[in-house]
Picture 1 (cartoon, rainbow, N blue to C red):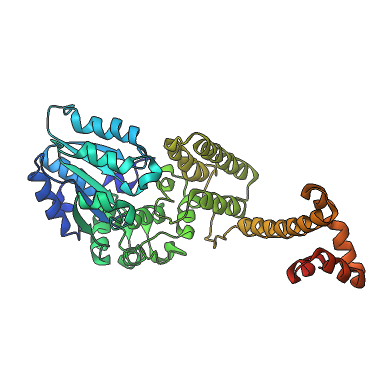
Picture 2 (cartoon, one colour; picture 1 turned 120 degrees about the vertical axis):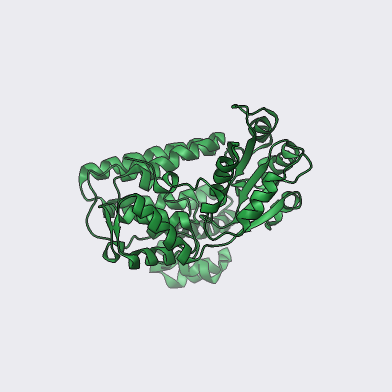
Length: 399
């Protein structure tokens, strides 16, 4: 099955990271590190080379890379244990260390029970260089963290830099390609190299990458659309391609579940494929339920693996053609149902007040009022006046 290309072709030196002048600054700050140094926060959009810089620096400077994902260590105790342990323990191999705290956007200040103050405490005076990565240090919740760090900006990559990098990757993978296809992928990526490499791997499944293979590939505007993410899941039989499909989608996991659930039956037409696909979705939902109950955020890994690789591998082979995936209308239907219930409850409360019974008891009598308002307009007006119903409530009863 093989590794995803984005992991297989990680730069081994800082010079191999394209289009980011901030790389030289990051290298200098790591090399001049002392206990008085501030943590270095590499910030910018997804796929701009922040994590790749840490990997390249560790390799180039002969340091052991200790990577901790801040999204998995969201509270004070977890940060003290994992990040504090990385800071105060010696290197496993007797060399220096480079500590990478990835995705600090996963912390949310006071909601994570002292996560940010504890992070600041454990990295202060670290004998080893500390790199943070995140997208927006100027969010108000990060004000204390921002002031304590050296900020290094990473900008969206120019499409020409992305094309040049894709050519190197495809040459090593022995994939035949049209340069126009690479240009289209690069321009659609919105400066996100990771997304461009993932697209290239997805669309070169047969050993070639031509413009005609790109189907509905559209503009990302620095964020992958749900259409493109679902394309990676539904149009591959490789787990390595599907995994991470939703990483750059600006939607919460519940919305992702609705999209996948709605479009699965439209994409998978063979009963066995559909059965296995819904099996994977239901298992993902089980893990999401455990996260809500127990706050075991590590379960997100399993939930997303089932949502992506699980659904992708549910089919025996890739279905031909490219379709336009649709957004589920379930949330809208729930909202409409809730609005109807709110009207029903409002009428029931007024009825309960006048008839001296409980609201629950009055709810059962609302259908009789609806029948009255439909069939006897004169009596309906008298009842509306007696119950002090407003215009919207009268209209709802008389539909």
